[in-house]
Image (cartoon, rainbow, N blue to C red; front, side):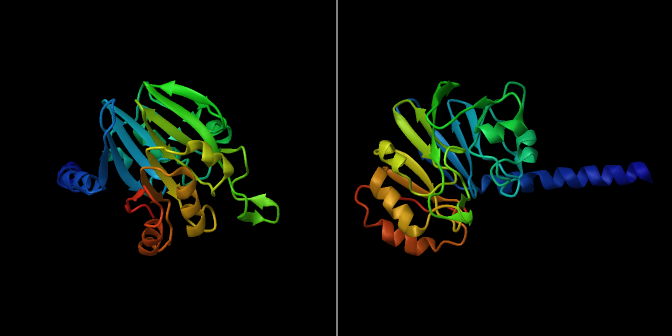
Length: 247
């Protein structure tokens, strides 16, 4: 009887696997053309992204609340912006880890990972032919308590990934900050708009004007009214705003 039950459970699992794979395949994807090959971006949700380039898989801030990572490609590189649980999820990381997976993270996040390259604001390092710049990500206005920002300056990272001459900026949890002026002209920017932890809509519009990315993806969007946000961003010249489900 026990053996028969195991057989039935195994057969049910086999029947469910295509459904799980189909669910993952429905995650939206965009392709960014670069002079070093196409970058395929899979929008997993919240602040969680998967990038594929030249046969390499890069996971950024993996979180099991957004995807079944057991069905996703294993990571060649994992980037973690900071230590908060919706950006550093060891369950997701273990699901995509393989022999040879490289990790890069902020100092606080690295404490949980082990064998990790620590990147501080201003650091740059090349992984798998991809230069990664760590840039500041922090709050200036939104506070956890008086004088205590949700994301203190110097602790968290945003990342600029270089695919040939194409730069893709993943901001992490941040408000609009002066250091973004140095990123003017990035090709693709992922900017968070999720109160009270990151940007207001006004801040995101200001950041878009400051950087003028060719393509802007609002991400980590929470309960933001994306239709209204996209309408406001139409006033930013030269910036194509693409809305994808990244609540």
